[in-house]
Image (cartoon, rainbow, N blue to C red; front, top):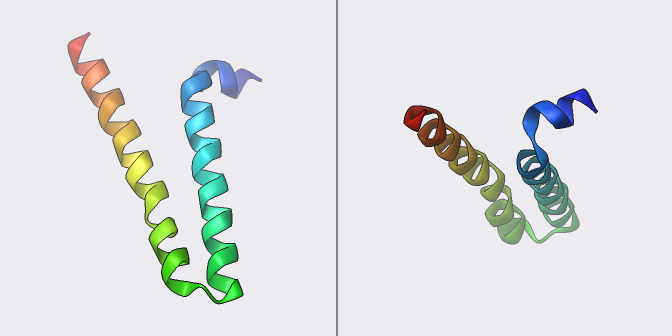
Length: 62
């Protein structure tokens, strides 16, 4: 619970979304739909990068 307070609700939900996307991408890849699995697998790093960028902008304005 302390981690959730430290991260915040929005960041925690974004991290859970990334984990869910990774699991779906792995499932698609292992089932045989490799191109869709790879396409979905590229989204979590993108979302995490956007999350870091927004946090950097927020900290810079302080």
